[in-house]
Amino acid sequence: MSGRERKLSDVLKRGYSDEELRHIYELGRFFLESGKVARAEKVFAGVTAVAPDHLPSWLGLANISILKNNLEAARGYAETARRVDKTSLPAALYLVTIMFALNELTSVGSLLGEVGDSIEGKSDVDPNLYRFYKMQLARFQGAITQ
Amino acid sequence: MATKSSKEIDAFAQAPLTALMPSVGSLETLKNLKSFIFARYEKIDSYRQTAISRNERVSEQTQAELDMLLEVLEFLKMSPSKEAR
Image: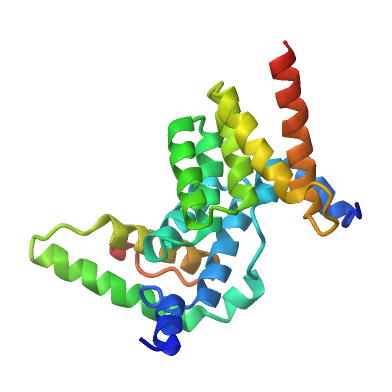
């Protein structure tokens, strides 16, 4: 099989290019930031329907499920995001948040260890991601010393 | 560690989980996709109408895509007829 065939199949996802999906996803993110949760959910669900490997949209669905306090659904979406890319740090941190809420501290510690190994000592880490990691780490340390 | 603009820090303070979601697209560019989005909507809605006329079930995938396209069209101020919903 040629590389060109693989590339085309990667780019064309049921009629959408990667670029088109990125801009549609951005609308979902905009709706979420604007508090239009139901509209954001429709956008993210649509993107994952046509492109099941669109990791940011799975995070969007996990985010909305957390907002709705539907933690099992949130876990499912975040785990799907991790399956799409097992090295995704945002997906790992989403799972950390959900596991905390489910009081699964062993899993929280394991995930935080993975994230820490990936970002500690590096200078090019997204500041939001680093800050979120530090917050969750402090929370975890507080939880296990209680 | 270097910090980014105060605008991003504010976004994080307001909604940390949302701030973790990557920003990978542009709403301005989305506006340039009107023709594509509308054509895609018409095509998928046509599938849906055909399925309904044959008493076939409309798949969840198809419905999810249609719902997404309707949201995009509404944002682009290009709402199709309500009947299509």
